[in-house]
Image (cartoon, rainbow, N blue to C red; front, side, top):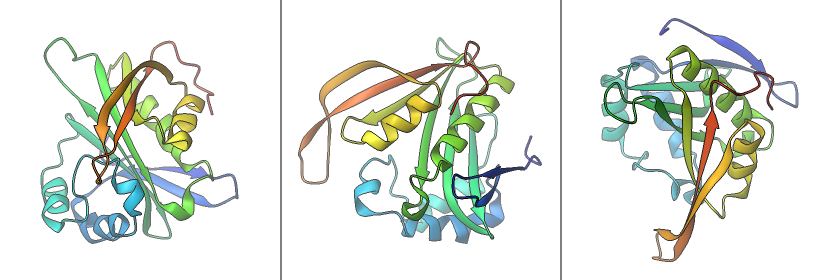
Length: 185
């Protein structure tokens, strides 16, 4: 699985390579996250601009726990999607999905391409459902996940806070991996 690579084409004809993250991607991944807007950073779970965080990720890749999928254009990372899995317990059939797309590649179909690939990978890993947690104000992300076959299952009011302490609503979206039409998006 670590050696796989696929090519995708965006709405504007740009060709992207989708492949798993490798240790030698450290500097490219750090550069990618340095370019993420402050607004987009608010929705991420880690301080991705901290080189120690990126070092931890690239030095501890375990594709059975987290499958980090990157999108490259001409050797530059323009998208990152991760599939988080558990091997034991009552949620072992579930995966969690997180996606970040470079500002200059948003609206071109890259998010949908990454999510569709993650759903296909989830099926290969034997997962049954995928979960994505999205801020209610992130309308483009909500739309992208919907296009990829996810549906909103719950809204938790005032569950999350931005950098200023302003509360916001969290939407939980779920995709039935086994029942999903493979041509979504």
